Image 1: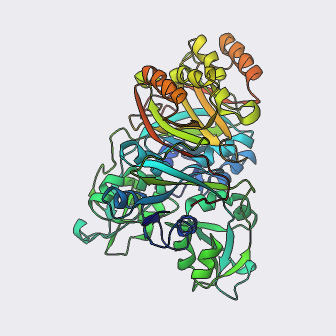
Image 2 (image 1 turned 120 degrees about the vertical axis):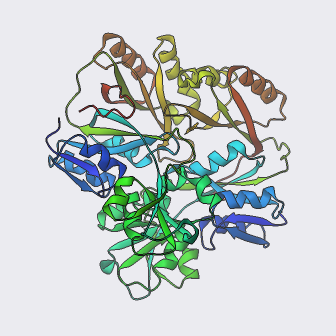
Image 3 (image 1 turned 180 degrees about the vertical axis):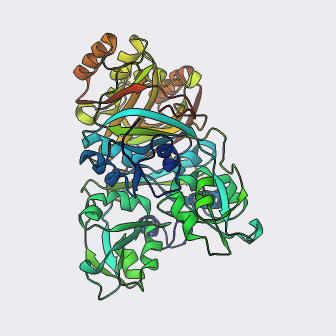
Length: 274
Length: 274
């Protein structure tokens, strides 16, 4: 579907798994700002980045970058995440004292880590973690099966995440508006007059009165001091729909700043539709 | 004021700076769950942990632990955060290719890191970062001046955070209810019926109609799948006030689960009042 894709790498991450199902022509960058820049400068058609996880919450940096970027959300992908403990071949679970992974993967496996009294070490990605322990005897890494495969590691324990409700939502960020399909979602961000969080209800009332389902509401700091926020809201409908257009106009009257981040088809879980 | 304090360590973190201004009898634990456990098991009177930063947002793990913990918020402290780049003595800024720090400190200095094209490495804390680079020539660490002092490092650049609105809010978690002072704040968490974020406005309306100022509203995943949330709200007033009691009763009727996390004096920025 896409000609060229840039994804948040390195190879072996869950983002890599999503990107590789969409195109064979792909490359990675190791930071979210660099990934977005590649699309802004036309080195790739779309960027694949994680935006939220059902256990750990929003990927703050992705949301923060959407505030100023001109890229729009073209598509979303919801992928069930299964975390695995892996180690050098021959190392057994009893030998493991340290565990390396990305902070989100470590957060997702808190109960397992506490039960096995593992010391945590944060890395840039789950793939970097796998690479960093491939020659060490007392350490494991948490990550995807793909990472174990790439670095020749053995899976010591599967599905070690705290709950089975572990899903990550990825988005494709690009420059093309996605046409309505009849089963769409729109993402917006807004800030409030006087930075007063108490006024949020006036905006949410517009959705409620119009019976529009919200699928997400999260706040990020506006970076103007504690208690000032940017709100990110996802709701059913496409910004080209007449009804949604009218609602967006009403919201614009209530809020200080409104930005539409994109309208795109609602993803089915685990079903990566090219 | 407090007999014995446990804080999120190690020594040299910003949390250490707060804790040491409150008592001379203190010790640290290196994970937030362990810090809370020390108070739950009466090894310390209160725990000092970070709860939110004005740039990076909530400390997800602290919020998540408050859901199940019996500890209450006894006090809050708002501290301006100044991040510094430090390195081994004799190393100059031009030699630095890598930078080590806690993920929140790195997020707070994104622009500086990009400008100087530094490769980022995440560590458990800003203090661990300082310690890890003390003998390395091509790497710097981001953290407090206290960390530079402890590990004999030189400050290469001061105040490198993206904005000067960088404040961290810390809380003292313990077992004693704090009495009303006339200038108090109450923290609550709640979940909604049917996990429907669209119903949030009904709860916020109660605050608005009663002219209660909200100072915070953030969502965390309920961990039951994407789009299900626990909301954390801070508002002016003490849960012993007659007016606030009535409001909490009204909220309880609207929400699925309500938990009062504590009422405590509103902190002045940077003024750590023992």
